[in-house]
Image (cartoon, rainbow, N blue to C red; front, side, top):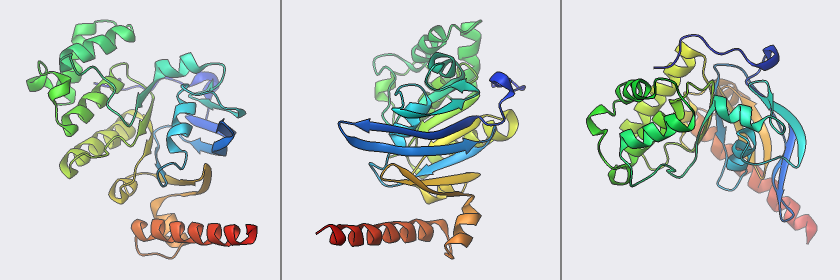
Length: 264
């Protein structure tokens, strides 16, 4: 179970994530272009955008796996460039691809993660996590034999072993059935509401986006709009979020078409 009292941020920071104009290039290609973003403690922020828009690169910069080429910022009050190790100790990262060990059981994977984070009373913590995420009956099953939904649950369990204050989740429910997705999001909302855990989640699903406090839409490395689901619906005068996203993509495609024509 998560600790009831949230760990105080470094230097009493107001925002769990606070970055200004961070950018990342790969061989001359701009993957993230001057991203500025502020997310409050306990907030669930949805990161949306087409494939290749820069969501994964942005998340990897925030969790310290990539160093920004320029810009500045903090996660949990720690500098994203100088204090990446401190950030990693306090956040849980769930990549798109299942990254745990297929040839270890669920229990063995969690025990390994507990060792990695040097958790006290390791066996007790593993037992609590198995119970909390509903993994007890499958604890001796090899991870490689699990279905997508169970792998997702195991991945989330490994993220929560060390009671992180921040979750960075990169399309965590891709390819998972609707019921498993609902259970996953129920857990995220509980962590936010009851434990003030902040979550940045990238997704392509509008029903998941509706469960976020705020959303950001990123295209070609640029964050073009942010707001609550209702604010975006009202801003673009659409009936629902799905229509908002269709409107945004059509508008973007139209501007790109005009730009391309002007260059020929």
